[in-house]
Image 1 (cartoon, rainbow, N blue to C red):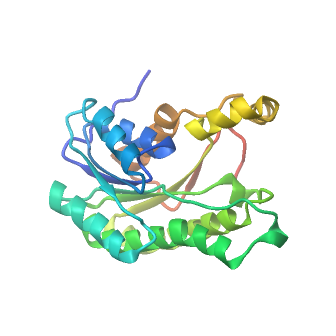
Image 2: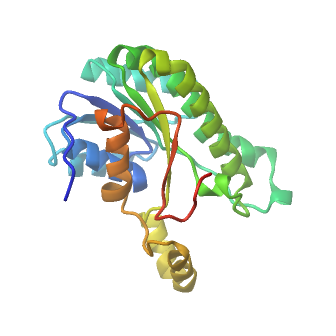
Length: 255
């Protein structure tokens, strides 16, 4: 049975929302009635996403093409949502770029790319959103990764940034609890367009990955990851903060 959430008159920012998991979450929030600002660097993908999403719910769908690596742009993101929607209830930091390399080949530039598109924007956007989130008693959803939790080979830059985001989120959760702002993380495995392309190129590797997941499938960006994002942003999770939810079919068990 599908759980129904009502986000009418609530507003949500989703970075990296024009594709993949970000688009799945945007779809879930739009269907729940939310006003959504989708932030992405890909203008063509943004236009396609807006066209598809604006017919799915009663809320507004706005897009903003920007590079989140610049703090000035991050300020614009928050100001746009508050100006257009009148409030901010949910900040979802989903965007992130990185290079995969063996550890000994990792360069300063590789690490900087991961930090500048993942860790720094997450930090900056959270700080900039704080006044609006305090007013709405809203929530933040950040993204962790099994690459950091398990130390996946060739993912040093990505893993380092994701684990830094986890530490940052736990501190903010503790400090902002007094303001009734909750901060949680999702560590997902999902069948995005990129994964589907990899499935076609390397079917044996794909099958091996799926087989080691206890539930023997990859998550759906909307129905699985988006549904958990709705839960974390809703009153149903009002007693949950500072947590990493492993939405990965049972692949990793946190202790």
